[in-house]
Amino acid sequence: MSEYEAFQTPKGVHDILPDDHQYHTYIKKVIRHRARQAGFKRITTPIFEYAELFKRSLGGGSDVVKKEMFEFKDKKGRNLCLKPEGTAGVVRAYIENGMNQLPRPVQLYYIEPHFRYDRPQKGRYRQFWQYGFEVLGESDPALDAQLINLAHKIHEDLRIDDVFALQLNTIGTIDSRKAYAQALEDFYVGKERSVPPEFRDLIYSNPMRLLDQKDEDLQILAELAPSMKDYLDKESIEYHEEVKEYLDELGIEYIENDKLVRGLDYYSKTVFEFWDKHDGAQNAVGGGGRYDGLVEFLGGQPTPAVGYASGIERIIANMKKHKVRVPAKDNLHIFVAQLGKAAKKKCLPLIDKLRDAGLKTMGAVGKGSINEQLRLANKFEVPYTVLMGLTEVREGTAIIRDMERGEQETVDIEDVVERLVELIGEEDLDKYSPSELLYS
Ligand code: HAM
Image (tube, rainbow, N blue to C red; front, side, top):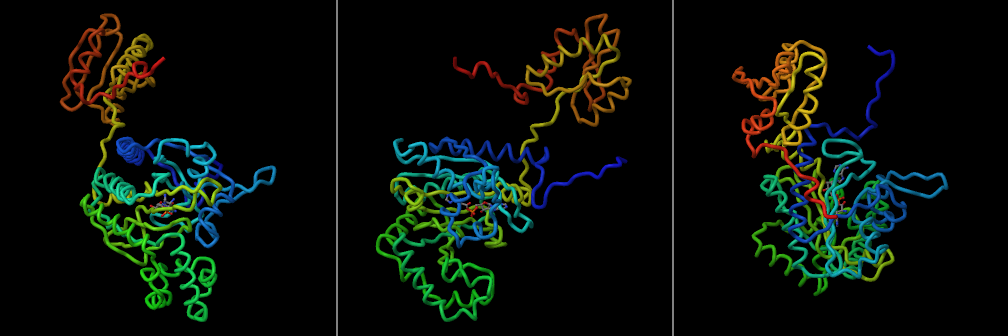
């Protein structure tokens, strides 16, 4: 035992251990392929930005701004914040880098960690990974439908599409949204005593958020509150109808949910979330919508946009819950066991060649007996072990041992790589040729 106390992670964050990385790697691969197929390009914005960017984008009434920002000051007293979501940073980058000059729509995607000072619980962490897509520069219901389709495709690829129900709503154009928010404010004013104290400021800052809270009193009030439907203008209604037509055309099922408002202020028109069919809204796996006013609100030219983001931890939890396994790419092929320094010297270049050939190889470590090393090879669960002792060094050979059958063959040292490639099979190799992929 050490005399020192061991550290733990701060509350709400966790390590991604190798087993979970296999999920992360696979999911990222799916996202990259699907994004590229649909013409998206990858963007990475900084982990921290000026806090004001998020305050203005997400709105002072949003839970994220009110309670969940990891805000801090740098040494010059500038107010910074770890990014709680991806859209604001992408829009900031779009404006700052003059991306409005690019052919439209500009389609960007990201896969990154985000930070929210949330109350940690299952599926809710203080650092979490999100992948997201942002489509800027066009207002077209076909884009909203295509984005939803992309999200759905990724769920399909990961074999969890059956788990989620798509919840769909429109919160109308910015104008009709304003009119509706006013109507809601008028409705709640005078009923403050029925609104639990912790929600009262929402009446003025973001009354739509009063509609989708779990609190029972608020749910009763929400039933009586004016309905968004009555405040939608013609443009909002027509736009929404078209989104639905395209979704029908794509064969994507959805549930119309007129209580769905989303937690962030920048949305207008289409909003959607993927909910667990059984658990409901509690742990939405992803959500998004149109944000036609945000680019202008952050200082850019008026630019319509639509986007979506999903939490990777929640995706993984669902894959595990539904017993979807990913290929175990980290499994070793070969363990190289050696006896004596002379053999160890011969083993190092051999290991190098095995690895270059795409055989995942470990070994030439330690001073244990051959039997001890074989036991270690067993623990690493390799299908083959290469053994080299003094005799083999002298004769220029090596022994290849089939670990499952316990059978051995002696081969010329020059033929070891070729023989093992044959035994493992070309399709199983972890091969890549970096230099061939580069242009110069
Ligand atoms: P959001 O609904 O706040 O939207 O987050 C999207 C997803 O991120 C959630 O559905 C969930 O899967 C995951 N997530 C959020 N918070 C946590 C947490 N504390 N722990 C684990 N997972 C979490 C947005 O962030 C918008 N920027 C989406 C968007 C993009 N809208 C337009 N473009």
